[in-house]
Length: 60
Image (tube, rainbow, N blue to C red; front, side, top):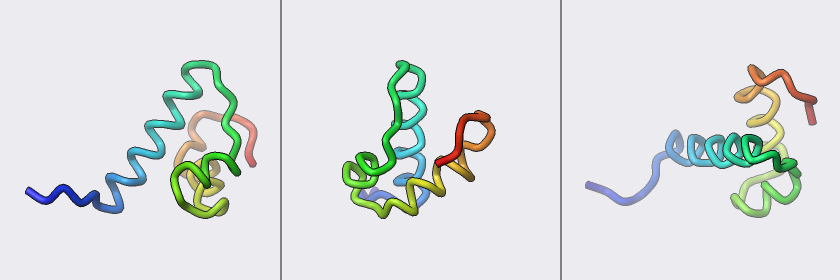
């Protein structure tokens, strides 16, 4: 089995990490997340605004 992550696995990892942090009461800072996950700020904004929209929090 290949150890290379698929795009879906990468997105799932990012979202899981963000949800875990929220559950721990931490604040999500998009700029820091973008650097940590080596993606653009826009990617993090999409993750928060589209994929995690069901949480009903403030949009970035």
